[in-house]
Every structure is written in C-alpha cells, then in structure tokens.
Amino acid sequence: MVLSLSGLTCSYGPVTAIHALRIGVRAHSVVAILGANGAGKSTTLKAISGLVRPSRGSVFFNGTDITRISAAKRVKLGIAHCPEGRRVFVGETVKENLVLGGHLASKKSIDSKIAEVLELFPALERRLDQVAGSLSGGEQQMLAIGRALVSSPKLLLLDEPSLGLAPIIIRRVFEALVQINKQGTAIVLVEQNVSSALKLASYAYVLREGRIGLEGTPDELTANEQVHGLYLGG
Amino acid sequence: MTLFLQLVVSGLGFGAVYALGAISLTLIFKTSNVVNFASASLSTTVALLMWLALNPLHLPVVLAWLIALACAMVIGVLVEAVFLRRVEKSPIIIQVVMTLGLLVAIEGLDGALFGYSPKTLPHVLHGSSFAIGSVLLDRNNALMLAITVLLAIALYLIYQHTRLGLALRAVASDRDTASLMGIQTQRYISLSWAVGVLVAGVSAILIAPAISLTPTFMENVAVFAFAAAVLGGFGSLLGAVVGGLVIGIMSNLVSGYFSNNLQLTFVFILILIVLYIRPNGLFGRPVVSRQ
Ligand SMILES: Nc1ncnc2c1ncn2[C@@H]1O[C@H](COP(=O)(O)OP(=O)(O)O)[C@@H](O)[C@H]1O
Ligand SMILES: [Mg+2]
Image (cartoon, rainbow over all chains, first blue to last red):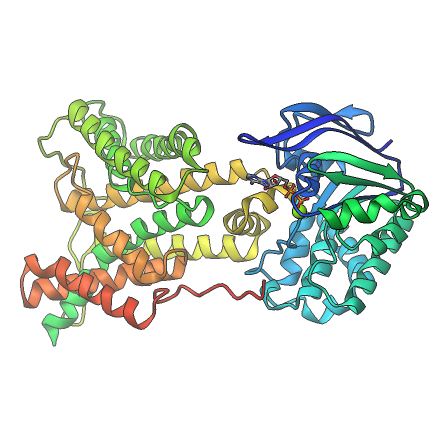
C-alpha cells in the first residue's frame, strides 16, 4: 500500500466533514473517490496532503505514519496535491508555476521534468511566458497537473480535474492521467464525472456525508443500482 | 526656478525615508497580507536601541549598527510569531486592531524604558553639501537616496529573478497552494517580517539625526510612508519607491511655497486624486484572471 487511511476523522469546528474513513491505495494504482457535493471528498485529499489536520485517525504513506507531518514535508516524501479549482498562481507565468512545482527539486531535475510535462501537455509550450491567469480553464487544469508532476510524486491527488471543462478537453486530461499512471505514479482521483473516473480507476469509494457508503471495483459498482441512487441523490 | 529645484532636491532625502517605510510595509504586506500599522513604533524601537548602543554603552558605530539591525530582525520575527500568527485566520479588522494595539503598546513601553526627553543620533556622514549648479544636495540626503534606490533594486531583482523571490510571490498569492509546492510558508513570512522591520529600522536611524528621537518621532514619517505605499499601489516595490519620492518632493514644495501645516493636507489631496484616477494606485495592477 502506498497510502492508507485508518479511522480518519476531520472536523471544521462543529462540522464533522469525514468520519472514520478507511481507505487504501496500492502502489501504481488509481483509486477513485466519488460522492455528491459536500460528501467530504476534498477534505479527504486535504488530510492526505496535510492541509487539514485530522482530529482522529492516521495517514500512512508507504508504511510510515505521516499524520503529524507538515504539508510542505509531505511533498518531499512524494505526495503531490492538485487542488480543487486548480489554484494556479494566476499572476505568475506558466514557466514560473512549473518551477514552483519543483520547489524542492534541483534545477536539473526541474528542467527535465518540465520537458516531460510539455510533452504530455503540448498546449502549454507556447504559453510558457504568459501569466497563468490568462490561460483557458482547460490549460489551467493542465498546468495544475503539470505543476504537481514537477515534484516527481509517487502519489498524485487530483480534486475534480474535469470540473467546468469541455468534453474534448476532459478526454485529453484523462488520457494524460493514463500516461502518468503508466509511468508508475499512483493516483487518487476525486470526481463528479463518475463514468470517466470509473474507466480509469481500479477501485473506487463512494462517500456519503463523510462516510464510505459503498466501495468496490468499477465493475462491482456499475453493476450496483445503489451507486446511481447514492450519487445522484446526494 | 532655483528655489523650486532646491525644494525638489532636498525633498528627495525625506522622500527616500518615506520610500523605505513604504518598502517595509510592502514587503510585509506582500507575504503575510498584514498592513503593519505598528511599523512606526517598531522602527522607533530600533533607533532607540541604536541610541542605547551608542550613548550609554559607548559602542563603536559599526557595532551599534550591527546590533540595531540584528535586533530589528529579531523584533520582526517575534512580533509575527507571537502576535500576528495568532490572528492570521481572523478577519482583517482583527489584524488591524492587533497592529494598532502593538503601535500604542510598544510606543508606551519605549516611553517607559527610554523616557520622553528627545535624544540625538549622529549623522552618518559629515561635511558640507554638494553643489550641483546652484542647487545644494546634502550628503546625508544623498546617502539616504542611494541606500533606498540600491535596496529597491536589490529587492526587485530578488523578487523577480530568484527562486527565493518566486517562492515569496507564491506565498503571497496563495499560502495553502504554496505549501503544496513544498514551500515552508511560515519561514518566508518570518523572513519578510525580519527584512521588513530591518528596512523600517534603517529608515528611522537615518532620519533620526534630522528630527529629535522620541518614542513617537516616527509617527508622522509613518503616515507619509503609508501614504507612499498606497500611492504606489500597496504591493509594488517600484510603486513604494516612486510613491515615497513623490510625496517627499511634494511635501517639501508645499512647505516651501505655502506652509508646513499644509503638507499632510496636500499629500492626501494628491492621494485622493491619484486613487480616483487609478483605483489600484500608480503601480498596482488588478489581477488578470479567468478563474
Ligand atoms: N473550510 C471549511 N470550513 C467549514 N466547513 C467546511 C470547510 N470545508 C468544507 N467544509 C464542510 O465539510 C463538508 C465536506 O466538504 P468537502 O470536503 O469540501 O466536500 P466535497 O469535496 O465532497 O464537496 C461540507 O459539509 C462542507 O460544508
Ligand atoms: Mg470538493
């Protein structure tokens, strides 16, 4: 297991966003986390990357307990989090955004990683010197994913990468995710786009009100009538 | 014409000090999003420590400078770590009250510790003014101007062309996302407070010989520095420098042609006009975004 969450509970003041989650991610695999708005998906990713502190439970990364480690140090261990809403640095150039992704890496490794990212997302190449805020939504998403890759992560957390994008762009982004995964990076994919997510994932969890409502392989889940009910019922 | 040029040139000295104050505010604001209203009392404390090192302790000038500047950085780090970090997630108004509270509290402490009788710090340079044609340029004014311009250039280069500067910009624009890049954001915020109070402290030490050093002596300077930062677009280093110099020249012209008492009025009328025409200040730019 590259990642395992045991009994993970996170609260915002009186609101418990996720409750005693138990989730496992095998090395090199893609795991999807599905669920309606407010189900606790983003909070789960933030707990994994260290942006929120769990009130109970633990996060294990490659067998070590990282629950008390800061977000910045988790990047060093090999966790990259591509947050909800992309969050590119809009005032900085595309190149600078990519360099920031490699904050902990050497200059040499940044250069070679950026070259890889541009191969994966050629659309970014001619935008390198433009400020990121001037990119289209799809390009910003590619930049956000590319930026996360510059740190050479072992585990990539993606929060709704398809949100607000045209179907053709979504397809391109998902093709890139297949590539990234092929090269050995495990992925935790949070999505509302259930069909795309289940095509990519080898295992999926469906969250409902901060708890795991259902889990299984994509085949098991698609065969299950409940998925649609749970999912669309929100 | 000679009077005009003379007023402009001698305004540059104070203008440089306002620019330093504005740079200090800008550095701190850029990374921590806090408007440091305590700047005046923090920089006064640095100048008083300089006085302490020079007068009662009779340390050599260079050593006194080093001690004062080291203390400035420690003060910056401590103020952020002890006070501002507690309220970093609170509404802006709470942070404003916190820095205003620090302004008053530290001023009072300075008064209690050092007394209210005016003290003097020596000029850095001695000797007569340079003559440029018929206009005289005071040596110390020239020094202040040189320090300000060099510092601004150095900071600009660091911000725009180094990875340190890039990380500082990232922390400034989105702290959570910066930490997802592996940036230890807290360190950069401490650093910006250290350098911010250092710069403000330098401005106080440079200006103190020209006005008498009391626990409240930086209050007026700080108002002009604040105005300079706003004029420059709060957040732009170039803007801080230009804003400081413009205000230094402007207020000197007003006191030369009209009256000392009208300085503040004229400066703020200028600011109202500039902000009316350019709501983001001279060098502030609205963020380009399609998000
Ligand atoms: N910063 C926050 N402060 C307070 N409550 C929050 C915060 N972020 C999320 N929540 C609450 O936590 C719950 C889970 O939110 P989230 O993890 O964002 O869900 P999802 O990503 O599945 O839409 C929701 O009830 C949401 O309102
Ligand atoms: Mg979410």
